[in-house]
Length: 115
Length: 115
Image (cartoon, rainbow over all chains, first blue to last red; front, side, top):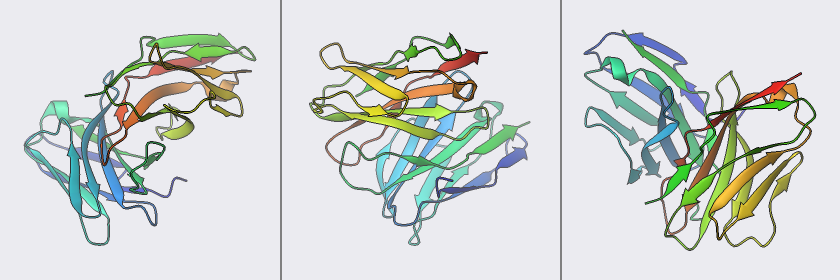
């Protein structure tokens, strides 16, 4: 158990809908990362937060948004969903120190299916 | 910008044999960290091993070792004495130095261990 909690584990919805994915980082971790894993695409970095502030942004669509709350949990909002948004969405956390050896701890992911 | 390349979509190895999974990277940062993660069929991402760009020795963690060749920008994962439980996707990743930068992942290699 990594200590990172993601909910829900599975989500099935229709095109055009909006969903919210939730992540609770490991106790004490200040940084939260969101990744999208599609078939044959590896892990695509979406966005990173540190102690409530956005720190790095990847290939995140404008239809997607995220935030990190004062209690450090994070939410990823996906709107106007399209079939191509179907993927496994991972949240990861780390301590937030500025160090190259800081590894990520991953949640179990949310499998999103857009029908 | 950093990039991770994993050129082996799939690999087979006989049980108890050693296998090398390739990873090359591209970065302009002088300091960076390299990671390998394992993703079994259950989906979770498991940290395996870390190598710092200034580390003098290759990293080892049990049956995992990292063949780090800085001049060639390669960080290959070596798994010795393969076990059936090693069958999984393996991802190489890099974290640059200098603040809150994203961790970039490769597309992964699917390893299958044959009895």
